[in-house]
Amino acid sequence: MLGKSELTDLFNNSKVNLVSQLPETDKTKMRLAEILEERDLTFLYPPLRIQAELSKQLQADSNPQQFYKWIKENLDPSIYTDPGFINALMTVLLKYITQETATIVGDDKAVSEKEHNILERYRPILNAFLREQPSLQLIAVYSLQVHFCELGFPRGQLLRWFMALYDLEIVEEEAFLTWKEDVTDAYPGKGQALFQVNQWLTWLQEAESEEEEGDE
Image (tube, rainbow, N blue to C red; front, side):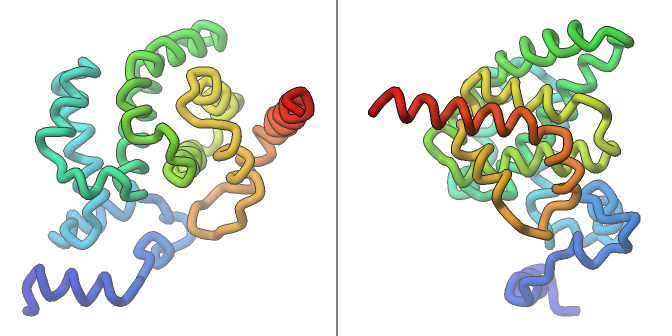
């Protein structure tokens, strides 16, 4: 009755978190996307539309240079620093890379190496949006948390991705340590995520302290 433009303004001004309105068992972006699509309301949540477009493009042509070119030609530069865009980009790449390694069964080392190699190919794209942007790097880490929460936190996968993003210098120490201390209900699964990576974060914190002492 109001029309898309007026309804969007009304919704944005309401500050309603749509995911938080879902039943406890359905609190995922995936389920939200399905519900909005069923009701022709995807325009209310642009990150889901962007994520769908990014995913479609990546499936059509996985070449990193072409993927980056498509982003630059089709998405407004004003969204590049938007948390919703960073979350969409990270989630799409996560799903694509884990899909590419799904055929490897029972060999964690081989899976880790392949994930690392594919992620390295897309590193220039992630660096283009995340370099020297600690707040956006934090969103990238939360994207990992939510993604693996929706999968039920398969053993070792979150830690593997934390280590890969750190090794490839996509996400810096500051973002990981900020994530560790950050308290928010906006992203599900924080407790389980911390349990899986806490030992590695402790190592990271100690390594950073030693580095600072060395600099002094």
